[in-house]
Length: 426
Image (cartoon, rainbow, N blue to C red; front, top):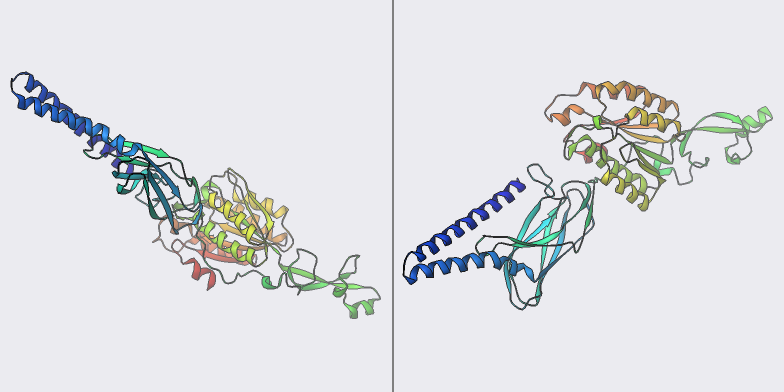
């Protein structure tokens, strides 16, 4: 729509210009055929109007400069403010100049054309040898990495016969919009994730919270506090308690970035929901000192090694801001690779929206992952709701939840339009 509007404006200017040129030619033809001064005066007046209409817009923007300043990071749905400084280097005032910018992060809502140069406002008056500062509040519509600009000035004043433009790349050039994050009070991880790093469980590094599952012979390097003295005395041999890891000190997000797995449009797509959920869960785990890593098989491999804290959360956010569902590798194949290198007791967070033909292979990979003693936390998307929000309950999601229950996996079911805050904090 914005492109059509620009073409329409250009066409109208051309029509006005050709009409004025035609009138001027008619006036000169009439003046030649008549020995009167009035036709010559009219022809001269039309000529002057034509010259002013073509030249003045270039004079208005010729001695102006513009710089945009603002943040380089934002979140989906956040309103950010850009400051635009317009300076007049000439001695005479300038007026009726439009501020034009190319902002692909904004106007991505349905019905708008992101990335098209748009008029953001009209500068009524800038005194000579002075500057004016304007603040533009803009809403970040969709996550991503965007190159802004160039910011520019345009004028077709006073007659709209021609438009003069001046563009500058000064100021902020790039903007990263992160997925929208919602608060999570607690996560249904197996075991006691709040005690993983509090010293309550004296287990080997990475074992995390655990429960007693049996006894075995003492080995060099075992913690003496795990020796079971009554059994050791009875068997005349040192025996130590063996533990079953329930929640590892590492949470592994595995994104499904295959093309066929992403359904829906814009912010109401399964991929966008998955990224918001992953970002929110990662904030919880990273800030609770739970080691977190991220994997995804897209055209550009997504791989964030395990870590915790604010810096690790920022690394994960940087990846989630730019990732896209453009991969060709099936999700089942990705999960098989994860299973071969999963830590004992590690919590693997998976996002399930497989096409009908891939569901069987995906669940076989999940069973193999569970057999490797990894814990599974599954986000199950109802695909039909992302195609038609008014659709009835998804039978494929029902089957997925039932299979996940059989392998003792935790699952959260997500429909398009769900309140994620309530869903993850109920």
